[in-house]
Image 1 (spheres, rainbow, N blue to C red):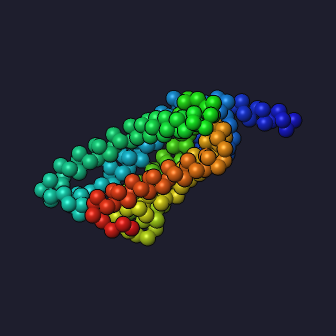
Image 2: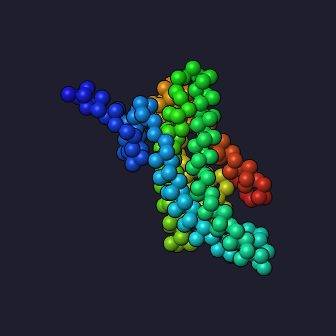
Length: 223
């Protein structure tokens, strides 16, 4: 009976909401039956909602503080809102595409038989976590104000920093996504636990590195 239940569980289609409650089961299902289009459409819609909140949270005073001339602030604000909203459409697609291609290259080096479709599906499902974090943080920013670049759920938000910087990249939903990436690479791509966690941790630190470079280029304090 238990074996039959396990078989039935694995033959079911993976569910996006299951990534919050039973990610390991979803990754096993993705390995057996990878799904792409419907989950990707749902994720894209969620990102559009999140970036719409972000666009609505932008105001001219924030841009002026960032160095935009006051007489150009309204024009730049309008352009920024449109750009931010459009970003919600392309971010999930390019994000999943790039991460899946990199993961596939690593998997091939590690002699894994995982397919690109499986990895694309895996990374699409993982993005539900980032979408939830975006909507939550931007919804809160829209309600209470403040810099939308600083997530409430990041160390920068917790410490009430003026700039996101490196602390802005150390964020609950980002860490959650990194953990799921490690689990997914182990369950779906059948990489060893050590290699899967190493890849996930390296990618997480690379994101922190990009944040550090961005902070340095802006001439802001490192933290």
